[in-house]
Image (tube, rainbow, N blue to C red; front, side, top):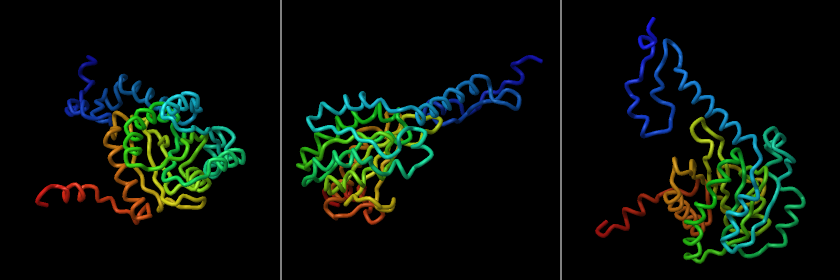
Length: 257
């Protein structure tokens, strides 16, 4: 049988230029085409590598040192990547040495910015620098006081609770590698918590997700984060009690509204 008779292109193939999602895959008989199968295996390998590999901490530190703030390298109680994956609880608490280091920097801080590897080292090797290039000048223009920048190895979201609590920061903002999808091994998330302290639950946090050039762009993520920071510090709360009314605020700012 002529191979052309059993290979079918998907009629939605022209829509693939608008998204990285796995759509319009076509088929060869009842199976995927060879090209799509190879693409799937490549994407799966990239996602596994993002989760399993150790973050290049030197590269992340180099991307943060230009902002003229102290940069602290911290670790959690998970001693390696394998333990971090199998024991999420250990990735939420700092090692004794890291906790002791933070105590030297206690002060009256509005915000502590944290970069943690989370579930994608790839995301944290590529996104924090370009994102902070946009964010930090605007934070400084609003005269918010900043604690030292913190890099956390084998860190979960809740590690920022302990960091913020020790530093006595009003607000913790953690940039963290998100669990990869098959088209997004480099996605960064941000979690914002007012009054950080160990033992808080997820209902106390606000989240901005899928930050990367092919997802939520850096400029849009910066605007959203600045809005949440401003409202959180003004109202002294975060999480489910902090309603995102950014669109309403924009409408009310238009003359005549």
